[in-house]
Image (cartoon, rainbow, N blue to C red):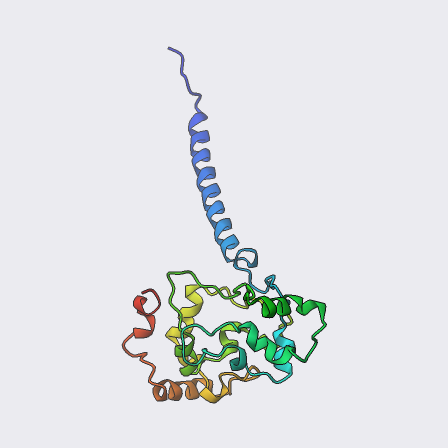
Length: 219
């Protein structure tokens, strides 16, 4: 009986297996890069909103973060300002500006504006704004230089690995509580020494690994 496969068939089979393995590894690598890319994570990409609200414009006018985000110090959710908050100023400022037409329509009809959340964590992640604010973590640490953003975007991808960098070494990121809302705050040269003092002062339980316990964020 004639030989079905030629001698070089073994070489082809081995080469096929190697190529298949490389293709699978390359495909997985591509998906990993794609998953972390700004295209998927929307980092540094302004999201379309019903009104192109400029944080830069409002913060440069001296409006404090807490004027709009009223529950950031006391609740898990920082709060999205209702139409009433905006109208406190815009009843008299720029009343005829076409860009603010959706705001005035909301005020007249009682229907709230449908803002698009820029920092929207998955449902299986629990995040408490007040816990971080009261522990001395500044707004800019997570949200970036919001006071320089003409339109709001997500500065960081919010991966678990990124969060754990702070949870494992909070002394590298913590700041005095009276500087939490200071968008121009710069860590001092002795940040690590100051951070270790603040970790103790603010009662952050780092020693018992509670900061990296799964239950802390996944409840």
